Image (cartoon, rainbow over all chains, first blue to last red; front, side):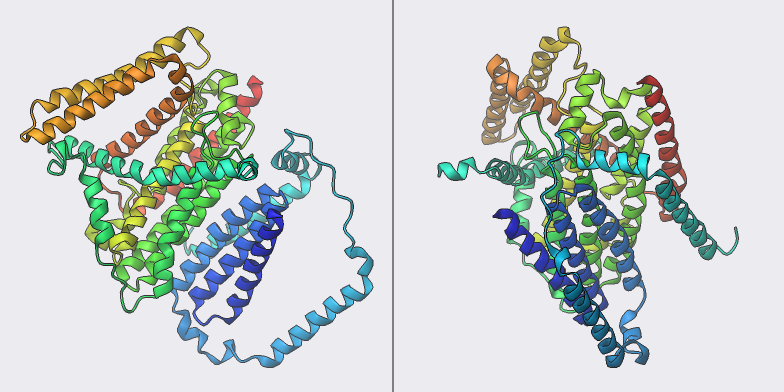
Length: 169
Length: 392
């Protein structure tokens, strides 16, 4: 009962945030709407007992990415930039995107109707083996190579960022 | 009614409300402690007028803040201006709900307690930036941006230092971490042959930066930025910012003592012979000493009412000391006593640092964060992982 209430609350938060992100006028307000949308997704993760994803969602997206977004928005005068011609009134492109996405969703709904059935609930995890322990076992044992490759990708991104930001190394 | 009591969320809800309601009172007396200790360090008396020895000063301040006119700048972003302090307070208060005060007294024990605290302190940055931006003032905006940059930088070192403790404990649950220390028979600060002292110091230093306190109080450097992000705030909204700042101090202090100082455990938790002397002696010294000190002070009060008041306070402290001598009371309440004693030790260190160090320059702050703290923390993780694995 309580979980259902929370699910609808978080889902409403996510959707309302997403809609407000594209409809608000001020860039800072858009960013805040996006934050509430991300927080709603984090809440949905928590309802699925994916506590680690919940924390990562909040720490990385809200605490990291969105703080830097806000940082940039506040330092750069975006309101003047938003009045430029190339950033608005793209009705044709928007309608094309909408039609394409709608067609995709419709295709999924017609072709994959049988895949929407819910499977049997997964067996309860053994007590003591929490979400994070299981996740780390998987990450560091079975998927070690992809995990390390991802960290290599991040390293490349860091080095690239330093190269671009620093004129003299 | 019985049905309500049996709900799984009922007890955590009540405990949470009680803790969040008690927090402002604790903050009031921490502010008083801070003013008195700073005054003592600077050879002043500090607040002396309201109540005997100024003990009611912060209560008076709170009443003043509540009754003050609430000013919202006319060019500000009104809704965000009102919303920003709420974010700060909400995140600070949420941190307190996963802290275990003793094995029994806590709101809830989630198996990702530490992650929730770091997540909430990450969201807390938003309250500061939004407050700074929505005020529509240059001082506020610069204060907010500085604060965001500082928090994002020091969050990394903080997280890495936490990682060392989590490696030693093998769990992210706050209760589980304390139990791991009980099982190991050592506070994690002294684990791995003393190597864990390095992450502990990194955590302590980063948490000073994380709570925007001197010597890292650049976001509110009054000589440059008036008051930083809360320049335009007044009255109760300002009070909420101040409240959440102090509750944040409680939160980072609780994480420090939970992770490194053994939480609610007494010193030497595995030496059974020390149980009686420590569990009974230290409260006797602390409360009895405070009581006797109050009685001594009461003879030197200028006003008779103050003399009676502070003598009454002394008698109350002596009574508390006496109550702690009853085994039935001592048993369940001594963990909370140790927890509070450790927390106030951390708070005293924060105040001490504020009274001792001058403020850093902004580039120095960033250099310390990125070029000293983060590499040291990474090295500490590496070495502690190797030593920890070699031991087990």
